[in-house]
Structures are given as structure tokens and as C-alpha cells.
Length: 364
Image 1: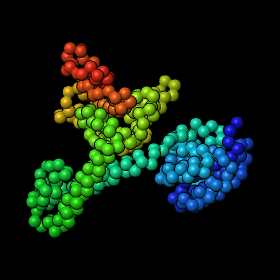
Image 2 (image 1 turned 135 degrees about the horizontal axis):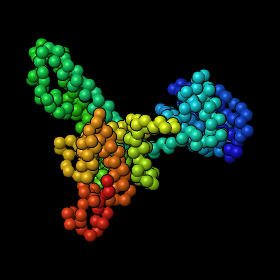
Image 3 (image 1 turned 180 degrees about the vertical axis):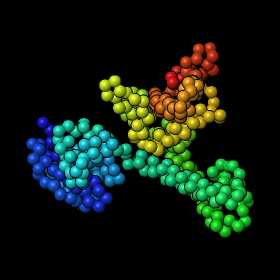
Image 4 (image 1 turned 90 degrees about the vertical axis):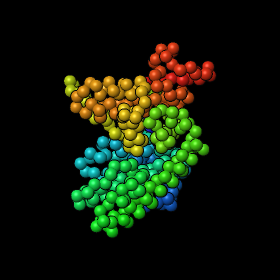
């Protein structure tokens, strides 16, 4: 029997939120809709006996709605939208029916909603800096691709260079007839690059002042200030996972599974969790396996996967290295271990370290 006398299911919308309220016996108490704004939701939650159990789905408004519900004394479950198949595969799907389904699942067994926890307000604010920079990086890439495409269509080519230096090193190679059309884009590129650098400065400053643990994570080759800060902000606490091997699953870096009887096909990664951090870790894995990545057990392990051959061998190796990198970073953060490229090498082959550095060596 559910310990709450009132169970509220709310389907969040951009303009209206549809709600379905039942009692402990499953009988309908109230249903309808309410405006999706702070005042309306505060008034809505205040009318119900506390504590009530509130079930909502993850989405744009779930963070602040959950805070308002908790401020009014209710227990709020934020359902993982990817896991609640009973809702998004419903043949008669509607907002009202979604709210009803949330309420009845929460009454029956809240764990069926695979509830998640929103990160704290400060972490969300700081993470917004990283994601704002990412938007500008994507905009810069789109501008560069457009300029290169236009120039190529005229029979010319621009020299290869890095994205930050593109507006300086290629402008003189633009055909004369295209300069009136492309000059404003070059000005936009210069401004975008300047703003990206400003975001990077702010992120670096936040990491040094508020998240000093990122310095330890940056000792891993390929992991820079942005990746280390994103890792800390996304996970928030190293104690969130008792076992570091659970971190890749949280970030969607483990294969999906669809086993039935003798059938157990090899599937692609789940891509659940935070896409932004997953993409950063994959980028780090590319560096580790690339021509400039220093030698380490992690690199050698990835190279052995590539050496096996087969279709998409390099892609599989990159994902595998990213997956193991997530484990290593969490282990380092949780224990304070220093990065050791060859943790399993014989002691005599390792460089001498101070006695107080007993934590040196992260197993891979």
C-alpha cells in the first residue's frame, strides 16, 4: 500500500500542465489542467494535503516544477522519460492520459518510473557556461563549412587551418568576386571566436576557484579544463556512484541489450544520460588513440581493439576507451589517485615518487 494519501501525476507542457490526482485506493480525486508558470503551480501544490507524492517526467520545466513541489512539502518523483514505455507507446496518447498514467504508476510502484535527480542550481548555472560555448562552437563550424563550400563551388579552395585561426588565415584566399558576400561572415566568425575564448576563460576561472578537483582530472592526457569541469558538474559528487564501473552506463556509453531466449544481438551504445559529456569523453578518446596521444596502458588497450580488425574497429575502440576513461576519471576523483600511464608496470620500471603519493596509479 502506498504510504501517501494523495498521488498526483502531472504531464508538463509549455503552456498548460495536465494533472490527474488519485487517493491511496486509486480513486479519482481531481483532474484538469493548470498554467505552466511559477505562481499557478505554487497555488496548485498548496491546495493538497502534505506530503503528497507527485510524479512528473523529465523535460524543460521539470527542474523548477520539482523545486516548487518540494517547497510546498510534497515528495516529487521525476520520471526518466526514456524508461516510461507505458506512456510514450500508448495507442491513445494524450496529455491527460499521460498524467493519469504517471499517477497510477507512482501509486503502484514508484520505482517503475526510474526516477532521476536533478543537479543543483549552482551546478546547472555553471554548466550553462559550457553549453553556451558549445552553441557558439557549433555556429562557428557551420559558418566555416558554408564559406568553404561557397568558395569550392567557384573552383577555388581555402587552405587547411584550425577553426580559431580560420578568419585570419583564409580571408586573403577568398576570390575577389565572393568577398562582398563573405566579408560579413568573416566578421561574424571573428566575433564568435572572441566570445568562445571569453567563455573558455570564464570556465577556466570557475574550475580554478570553485572546482579544484578538476586539476587532478586534467592530469590525464587529452582531458582539458572543459571536459574535467563538465565531468564534475554533471556527476556533482564522486559519492553518487559506489562503483566507478556504473558511470559509463549513466553516460550512455554501454551497449544496449535486447536479449530473448537464445537471441542476444550486439547492439550500439544506449546514448542515455548526458549527451554533452559523452561527446566530450569520445573526443578525449580520439586524442588518446590519435597520433599525438602519449603512450599508456589505456592507449595500448584501445590499439589492441583496433588490431582485432573487423567492421568499425576504430569506432569500437574509441567508444571503449571513452567508456574506460569515464571509470578512470571517477576513480581519480573519488580516491584522489594520481594519473599513472602504466599502473600495472613492474615497480622498478616506474619513476620514483614521494612516499606520500601512495595513491599514485589508477588501474585501467
